[in-house]
Structures are given as structure tokens and as C-alpha cells.
Image (tube, rainbow, N blue to C red; front, side):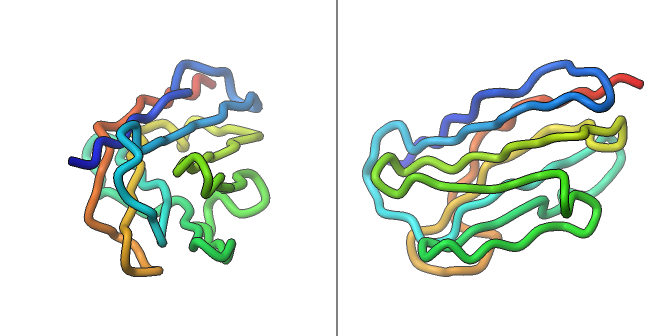
Length: 119
């Protein structure tokens, strides 16, 4: 069974950086779409960034120019480099992947990693 494991969350001051990683630790499937969602308290889960197997990426307007998504297909790993972090970026960040579709949301979710940005 697929098991997505996230890492890299934490507490950072505004203006700082974090890098999230997510890997299928059991390396069972080859994934097409990979990406990250986030959910702040009281808000709905929203797409932050996504990337296809071919490297086509998309971003939420709120993170364009500050976040960069990338992937390593050989390692079945997706990364999210987050720079110039703002307090409104605070939330629980979830990794999401699908082996078939190039569009998210996909079938498999990680447990979430907390990102907290202090002002």
C-alpha cells in the first residue's frame, strides 16, 4: 500500500524559508501528478502547487514568485521550496499524488506537516 511521508515543516519567522519533501516510502507506484495542499484552521484545504511527471507546474496566486515545486521521478519524491514566508502561509501542508491523472486532487494523501510562520 502506498505510504506518503512528508518532512520539512516547522516554525519560521516571516521572511524565512522552508523546504518540504514528500516520498512514497514503499516505492510501489510511479506517479503522474504530485503536489501540495494546505489547510489553515477554519479554512478549506487549498491547492498550493502541483507538478506533472513531465514537469509542468502550477501555483496558487498567493504563492507565485515565492514557492517552487520540483520532483525527482527516480525517487518518487516531490519538493516544495518556500521562500519569503508570510504569516498567512501558516497551515497544515499535505502531500498529494496520483499514479494516473495529471490533475490533482489525486488518490493518495500524506498525513500532513505543520508550517507555522511567526510575524
